[in-house]
Image (cartoon, rainbow over the protein chains, first blue to last red):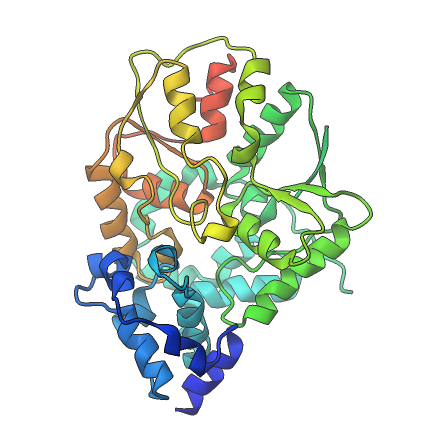
Length: 152
Length: 226
């Protein structure tokens, strides 16, 4: 429960803001996650947050939300459900090794320096079935030295 | 005209082709792009804390202050984050697609047409949603293709999600979503987002995936752009 409360603090929403949800489920009808896990209903998540209940890290919506904002575009109140999901991921600490490397690079250089991210994520890329795509990714390769952003 | 330019991390690395394309297209039209000095990462979609995320872009706007009021950001994630961070609307944060208007095409020198070729203009998510940060003309890519004689395909999937955001988290999700777009469209896929490019490219097989800027450069007569 505390985790969910904390997640909401990270968004621009308070629990009571979800009281406006009309329960129309238009978010569910457009949600991209339904293409990979049918029966996904963001409205149910909002309702649970409003009631002060927990949302688990292994819920399909929390795991697979792509941040496409189709729900926000369809919602009569334009509730930014992907922002809520990202906050939930943050408090559940569900980052993949790649995301950790991404944030590590931002902390170190102030920018995403791709060679650093790739190096850090090598074990994940090797075991995650990414190597077979490398030939398709040749056009993305290139080398440049990192730029270190000045700390202010 | 001179614009402040925010390339973002991808455009300095894997999306270097988009960076070069944007710079060339702007130069050909007589516009100057000047990078925001010492810009930092916008945070993309990786940060769950809204204040932390906005903080990155606020720092970038701080660095632009006094240098520019017009900022061009080609990467959809950077564009959205910058625009949202500019709460007072102090800057004109613009996506390049909004600058490719009638005046642009009237001034553009055409060397080739697109007759006999089929294209799927694919916008993905962030250029079109949420509404407050969406580009103004959501048909600009289709209009370009038909203007120069090309055939447009995949209208029904142009705003679907490719799942690019999940490519280094749950790759199977990206594969399923990208294939849904690919199966319901034909011809060369035209994108503007580095993540969409990567997701599409990974699963597109024989089909070409190009940046919209490559398409413009091809029409302008640039060799090997497409």
